[in-house]
Image (cartoon, rainbow, N blue to C red; front, side, top):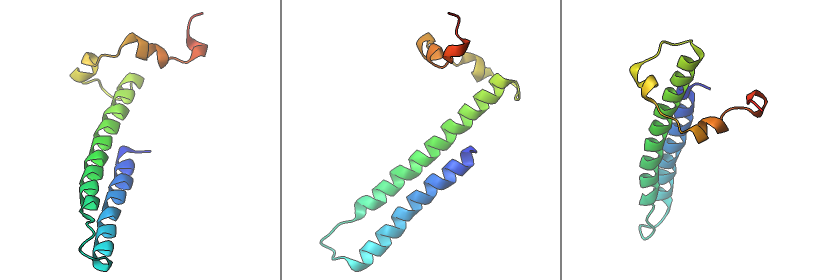
Length: 96
C-alpha cells in the first residue's frame, strides 16, 4: 500500500468525527458537551500526517537498501541497534 493511501484512509476517519460532531450537536441538549470529538479530530489528523511521513521515510529507506533508489546522506547516518537488526533477520538466513 502506498503511504498516501494510508494517509487518505486515516484522514477520512478524522473527517468522520467532524460529521459526527455536527450530527450530535444538532440533536442533543447543550448540557452535553461533545467538543472532545473535535479535539479527537485534531489528534487523529496529526496522527495521520505522522503516519504518512514515517511511511514515506520507511518506504524510501527500503528502496535505497534494495538499490532501486539513490542513497541520500541521511541514509548512511541512520543508526539501528544490533539487537533490533538481529531481530529483523529471518532465522533461515542466520549463521548457525
